[in-house]
Length: 216
Image (tube, rainbow, N blue to C red; front, side, top):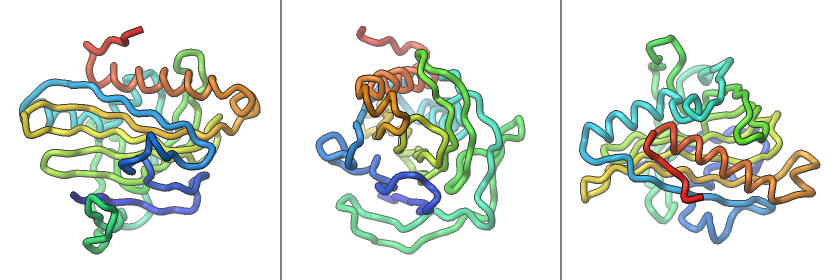
């Protein structure tokens, strides 16, 4: 498995890339609240391709009701980081991608190192933030990326969005995240962090799979 990580000290948290840790839910970064949810979005190669393209075109964020602005690709060649095996050991050198890709409306597609401003409210909670693409995964059966907070958010942390075409032919979409409260209200009332995360994750899942419905 290839896992590329863009390490940049401008993000406002230390555990860069931790949404890929197998034990995230058991051992989240200090002061952070972890979250993970998956949904089956269909089956087959075409569904995987369509889901992957939607993810890399920011469809999860836009479909959740967030507005994107100031999407800025990384300066110079895009850095995809070091390759790792399933145990987290480095197995390959870094690589670069010279060509930035764009959506049909001219918006840069997701790429490692890209920064973006997001604006909006989800479930009554503020979702404004400056975010950076921490890593991008593009494998034959697994595509996705992670966003890390740079500033301007009521929490700090990371969220990942991954589509996987499994060996049984099913396609699944998974959102994983960890959030540490920053704003005073969120530091005092930890339940607000969980409520905000649930609303965001529900929005992302619905955006990728319109038939998604919460269990209540």
